[in-house]
Length: 254
Image (cartoon, rainbow, N blue to C red; front, side, top):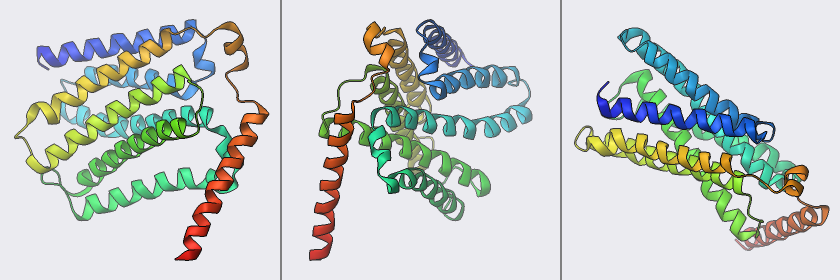
């Protein structure tokens, strides 16, 4: 590990510990248990990998065992904020199955295509794992874009913690997906983009999350958890039904 890598690692774990401390101080871990678990897991993951650096085989094994868990937790953390803001969508029965079903199908498709059409820098099962993790980044990025698109479309009130959590994941996933695409096409021609840029973007994401954890909600807002009123839920469901009716009408014309 060179000095730059060491600096990035130390900065990252410092920010992660700071996020957990502030979440504990603000009692945010009760509202965002999955996100808090993700941050805690990443800290333990870094400690484990650092301890195994002198042992190449064990480090390699630990990396491929722990990385998929991190990806799964990140998807669940994004979904946690998504559901807190758009919980009314779950009043529509089919939406409860479409969201996780779409993620599962996307991951399966990526694993199969990665295995049968491997990128230039990987082969076999490792290619499938890399493709699966890359697809997970696309899933997170897509959910993040949908999150802000729906928030704008439905005029959802600003939710500073959820918005910044999703923004951090969206930034990190978008840059990671870009870097993986560059590496898949150009292999090692652009080392900064493919290797360092994802780490830098993750530090920026940690900064966004730290700012969210540091934000203190007004007492009244914190006590009710920013829950939408019954009128808000009814209006949202009414809009959704209207949109579905328009889509059905367009499909019938075809």
